[in-house]
Length: 228
Image (tube, rainbow, N blue to C red; front, side):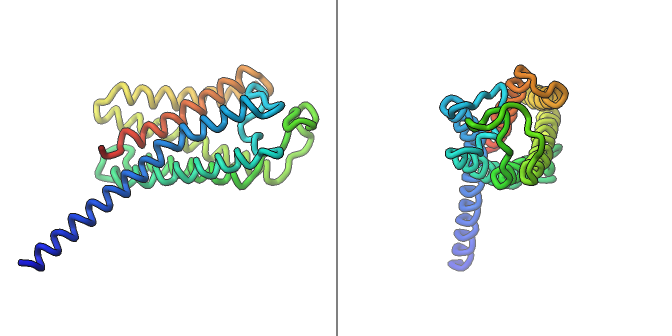
């Protein structure tokens, strides 16, 4: 009888430990988006020569204070990967549409942020101060790799928006489904405009806002699935 009680107690303790670690992982996912957004906004307001209508946030990795954005990419990426692990635990194949691929896509995006931390974008268009105006005639290998990694990460993030929108629609949560669909569509439209209208300040600002919206949505997903 005592052996049975001990085994039952161990099982309860193990279940509690798993629930606690899952909650911690999802808390990481909740913090990831807001952290990244706040750090970028603070830098945009304080870094000399930076203009969000001309410069992507990735360029903040340059200059004497570039370590701040590199750390922002790395920490936020790790938090998103942790959040994806938490989502995987609470979802999975048995959880309906999006249970498998939703967390995977968030993890790919988080890994992309880690790649962005390791692969610095080139200085351009007057930033950091002292850099020539306009687009550089050549691109470094790490800047080219940065663009490739960013493209994969952006596609994964947009796909995650639609995957979770489908999941919420199947669950009858139409408001959340609409939010996910609109976020994914806004991200893709503004990204397309950015690529088509290169150098357009409104397109640059619109895409920056779309990135912020998508990051907030990804963190909201972690909050929605986090145990109370």
